[in-house]
Structure formats: structure tokens, C-alpha cells
Amino acid sequence: MNLCKKKTKIYFNDEAYCILNNYLVNQEYDQKNVFILVDDITYKHCFPIILSHVKFLNKSRIIKIRTGEKEKNIYTCIKICKFLEKFKATRKSLIINVGGGVITDIGGFVASIFKRGIPFINIPTTLLGMVDASIGYKTGVNLDSIKNEIGTFHIPELLIIDSLFLNTLSRIEIISGIAEMLKHGLIADKNFWIYINKFKVKIMEKNKEISDELIKKSIFIKNRIVTQDPKEKGLRKILNFGHTIGHALESYFMNKNTNTIKKEKILHGIAVAYGMIYESWISHKINGLPMVDYKEIQYSISSFYPKKKYVLSSLDVEKLFMIMEHDKKNEKNNIIFSLINRIGECSYNCEVPFSLIKESLLKCEF
Ligand SMILES: NC(=O)c1ccc[n+]([C@@H]2O[C@H](COP(=O)([O-])OP(=O)(O)OC[C@H]3O[C@@H](n4cnc5c(N)ncnc54)[C@H](O)[C@@H]3O)[C@@H](O)[C@H]2O)c1
Ligand SMILES: [Zn+2]
Figure: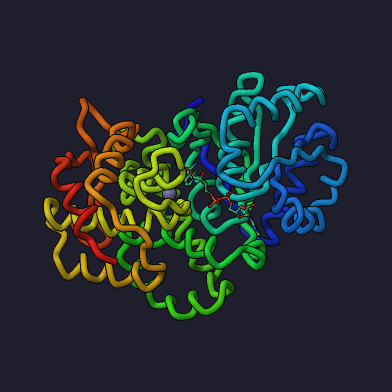
């Protein structure tokens, strides 16, 4: 599939439901040939909202999985494929993913492999899903504790954004999504960084203050980057800022068998927020990020996020390093980072020595 030729069609709120209604009619879908992937929670909170706008879906088949990252594995995908097979899905069937990044990643992946690819639509219901996971063609699942090790690129037919879903989302999930928005400002748009920081107090007081404007601006930044470089040959790598260390923290704290410290699961966005502080420090050391920018980033992230609850030992750092060695971005045994030069500008393919990674993990305080 030529990703450059086909662009994601993104629609917001009421207009989005109109477009979806028209799409389902124009494509002549049979109701029973439309499969809706949800988890327990999105089935309860989000699916009824969609149904109130899109009556067509009331006879569609619901594929309900348990909520959570634990479900994001190949076995869940096999179960979904068996369900599709059982209900005679064909290449002309449609999957509609209703949920956070876990659901859009799993559903997109299944859509890309079932009968060598069927169409799908993303209706993200978490902030992180809206501004990040559902945009950019990447689908996939984890392999044991290695994040997103198995995956494909597959483009949704439509991306439907409705900020109303955020009303039922927990506070911690909201701030998890904010990390990716902050990242978009840090890597590509200083004005957006200033803009989102201006709303900090309001955002911290009420979920509702994640305005449509903030969501739209953030989506457009990510979409602009991925359309220029869909398969991550170059520019797109800047989206990995904060993720080399962030993903390692997320995986490390997810896996209880490697205990050296008391482990408490860290959400993706929060791991990335912490990752951005560590990687800004590395950026300061080797990529010319001015100290004042580092301090601004550290201050901003610390005021959005809870203080970290762990203290890493040298042994933890070695284990984190081993996880980073599996990172898909690495080349020729070197750990490769995307690092910022200043707020709003990012470089990619930066080799960072182990000693500096270790120093950042042991020294950064927040
Ligand atoms: N494909 C990509 O480019 C990409 C990018 C970033 C992240 N991701 C992936 O996204 C995943 C994280 O996504 P997430 O943070 O959305 O997690 P998630 O999908 O697990 O959702 C978080 C929780 O919120 C619940 N939920 C969802 N919508 C809700 C709503 N409207 N109201 C109440 N509860 C709701 C879910 O049931 C779940 O319990 C990770 O697996 C990550 O790897 C993928
Ligand atoms: Zn992320």
C-alpha cells in the first residue's frame, strides 16, 4: 500500500458523525458486516454515544475484549480473527475501533492482517488515542514485555474525533495524553508549547479544559509530520522524543519478574513525560539545548505530572539499558535517540553513549 498517496481523513464532532453515516451508506455496508471493537469500558461509556449518532450500527457485531495493555498481544488478535471468521467476515467487512490506543492498535493490526487487509475506522476515546495513537498508520501489539514488537502500517478509512468522550476519562488518563501534546510542541512547534502551557492551570483543574482547539492543533502537528514521512525513514523519528527512555521505563515497570525495586505500573504518557525530562537533559549535554530550555521543560512537566515514585539503582539502569537495546530505532548496536536542539526543534538519529544515558537516569530529579 502506498502510504503517501492515501491520507487519513480526520473529522471532528457532529460533522464526523455525518461523514460516518454517509460513508456507511455510500460503501453499501451490510450492518452485520460491520464489526465494532471495544473494551469493557468503552462499550459502556462510548459506544452508546456513537450509537445515538449512527443508528446504522445498532445491528453491527460487537467484539468486546478486556480493558488494558495486557490484552495487547497476538493471542487477543487471534481470538478476534476467529470471531471475524466465525461471523463470516470478508474482505469487504469493516472494523470500527472504539477505544484508546490499545484498541486502535489491536484493531488496526487485525484489520491489516485479516484476509491480507480489510478496511477500518478509528474512533479514539482517550486523549492519547486522539492526539497520538490513532494517527500515523502504525498498528501493532506487544511481544511479552517488548512494546509494539509486532506490527504493520495500515491507514484507517476515517478518523472520528469527539472530545465528548473525555468526560468519562479519568484524570490520570487525561494527563497521560497531555504528554504527547507537550511532545508535539517540544519537537515541532514552540507556539503550541507556549499555548498548551498557558492552559496548564485550567487543564489541571478540569478535564473539560482540554479544548477542541488544543486537540486539533496537536493532531495537525502529528499528522503533518507523518504525512511527510509515513514509514519513519527520517523526519517521523522526531516523534520518538522522550520514548527511548519512556518506553524502557514503561516496559520495565510492567514486568514484575525483574524486580530490583518496588514496581508500580507507569502509564505510557507518564513514562514519556519522564522520558522527555531525561532526554532533554541528554539534549542539553550533547545537542545544544540551552540550559534555560531544559529548566523550562523540567518545570513544566513537573507541574503537570506527579513526582516520580522510584529511585533507580545502577542495576535498574543496566536493565533499562538492555530494554533500550531492543528499540526498533537502533542501528548497528548503537542506541539511537531523537533529541531537541531547542524548544520546537528536534533532530533524529543521535547516538548516545551508555555513560550519558546512565548519568541522566541517575541524576535527573523531578
Ligand atoms: N500506534 C501508535 O502510533 C501509538 C502511539 C502512541 C501510543 N500507542 C499505544 O497506545 C496505547 C495507550 O493508549 P491509551 O492511553 O489510550 O490506553 P488504553 O487504550 O488502555 O485506554 C486507557 C484506559 O481508558 C479506558 N477508556 C478509554 N476511553 C475511555 C473513556 N472515554 N472514558 C473512560 N474510560 C475510557 C480504557 O478502557 C482503558 O482502561 C499503548 O499501547 C501505546 O503503545 C500507539
Ligand atoms: Zn507515545
